[in-house]
Amino acid sequence: DENSVKPIYQTAPRGILFDRNQEVLVGNKPSFTLRITPSEYQDTLTPYIETILGVDSGYVHKILKANNTYSKYIPRRIAKDVDFKVIAWYEENAAKLPGVDYVMETQRDYSFGVMGAHMFGYAREIPLSILQKRKNEYSMGDEIGFAGLEKTYEDILRGKKGVHYVLVDSRQKTIGKYKSGEEDYSAVKGYDLILSIDKAAQKVAEDAFKERRGAVVAIEPSTGEIIAFTSSPQFDPAEFAAVTSFENYKALRDNPDKPLLNRATTGYYSPGSTFKMISAVAGLEEGLIDETTRIPCNGGFQFGDRFFKCLHNHGSTDVETSIEKSCNTFYYSLVNKLGLDRWSAYSKKFGFGRKTSVDLGEEGRGIVPS
Image 1 (cartoon, rainbow, N blue to C red):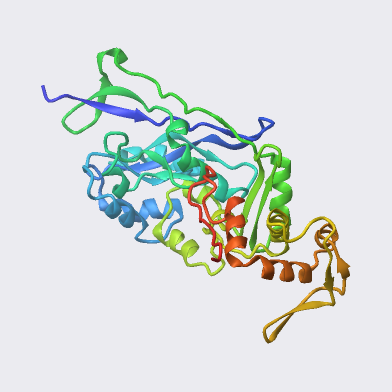
Image 2: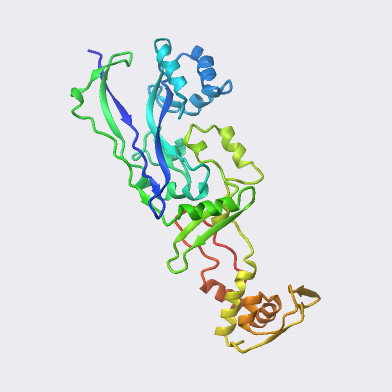
């Protein structure tokens, strides 16, 4: 008897990401995945596969070559979220397509379009470099969170795979269930996440930065909750939900507008006039000024051989008015008296120059001069 038992794994749907009002931000949808099992596949089929998929010549070879370290009996995903016409074509020609099959899987659904890509991140098929380190947790073909919230909460979102066992003959053809399915178990969906994000506020932030470069982070001051978070330009996470070619990734990586860069957490920018409040606190705490102290503004401040302009000639200005009018002269004068070391120390007391530990993956510390 040359029959053997073959496990067929069922992917677990990832947990859904909801906004604070429990509106779906990132969901799941069913999709067809076309696969090739190298041990049964005939290379003469490749032109037909590539034509029906509408991909360039050599696409199938690249996918199979990238995964040639795995057993030739393990199916490789060739295309995800394929059109039903591809499945209809397969069904009509299945007998002439050895080593080709399809499965129904779930993949991420971004029904609202491109929004919050750097915040949500994306999940993709686990690469060999990570699989080798986590082979006790993952198998070839499993998805793993690769950036943003998908990566941070991978262990919560990923769920548990299901499996059903079948009997196969010496040619790996299925001939029936193993033990009538007694040892099979279903996939368990991952846990959902309810975020602090407000979908409506997120859309406002996104719309404000279309065709522009920059970032928006809207925070509820009393709690520190993030209400909206966007970095622009951004990428389409749906591209990573599919089988993404290296060429597509390289095009994003090499784009001069840097759509993969999370400007909100890793970009370094001068804070400008928003820092005047911290300078004011430092001056008040150090006793260099009080609420009645007035500093003359004659349209700018002379420092060495340079003259730093103010927007207006504000005249004699107290601390409250200096913030209201955003008087540069007041703060040039104050920080000059305060000195760099004390100014830097107060900046650090407010959390500048260190990570916030926000749960969005990579984060820069920022730079505080000293």
